[in-house]
Length: 247
Ligand SMILES: NC(=O)c1ccc[n+]([C@@H]2O[C@H](COP(=O)([O-])OP(=O)(O)OC[C@H]3O[C@@H](n4cnc5c(N)ncnc54)[C@H](OP(=O)(O)O)[C@@H]3O)[C@@H](O)[C@H]2O)c1
Image (tube, rainbow, N blue to C red):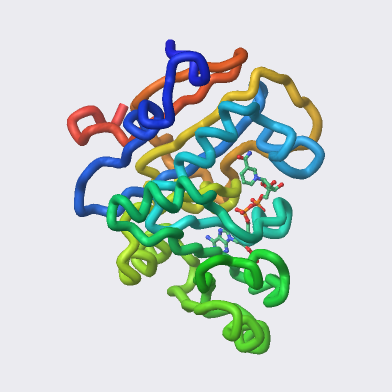
């Protein structure tokens, strides 16, 4: 098992996490969890993980055509401002990518503030994906700050991926949260789960990294790699090749 800081350069990590070079959409989720499955402590994930986790978290954004988050994560974590630093933007430009990936948020209620940091300070014009039940007045209020796309009822993973693909986004990089991952698990639409296992026990009321109303079939994933640092594990699981499914 490779220790991240001691033996891996950024180039090594980028090679390990590189998405497949294919035409199909590639949907990746990146999460941190405690040993006992808590996705939060004190209401956010900010206390979880370590320096190596932060390093991987930042490097993973480089691959994104679009960074996708649920509205709950925006409200809880206070996303805002630059999401990639200068070297990350240079890395992308050198590969013919835009300096900054697109940014999309999924919200049914449209309970987002047009002048809040997420929308007002976003370095690109954000995309808001919502359902037909979204209140019309809120939709109109947000349209100055973002492009609002109304999806089919249910806001399924397939509809979300379809809308992002229609905008030309292939590598969909999601940073959560649990309801959004639950939607994608239900739709069998997760191609990669990057999971940091924080070596602590949380107990308490925290939810886990995926939640949903219904219980879908178990989704078999395949270990892509396993790294470590300071007792934390950095796992990437990917959708198995068709001949290894299901089990
Ligand atoms: N451990 C980690 O790595 C990690 C990562 C991310 C977040 N978190 C934590 O997770 C917590 C937030 O959890 P959460 O489950 O509320 O996060 P979430 O999935 O980001 O947000 C849920 C909200 O997103 C919208 N949404 C998601 N899927 C939808 C769908 N299929 N259709 C319509 N709307 C959809 C809805 O917004 P509306 O309510 O606006 O309709 C829903 O209430 C926070 O405490 C955050 O800190 C942890």
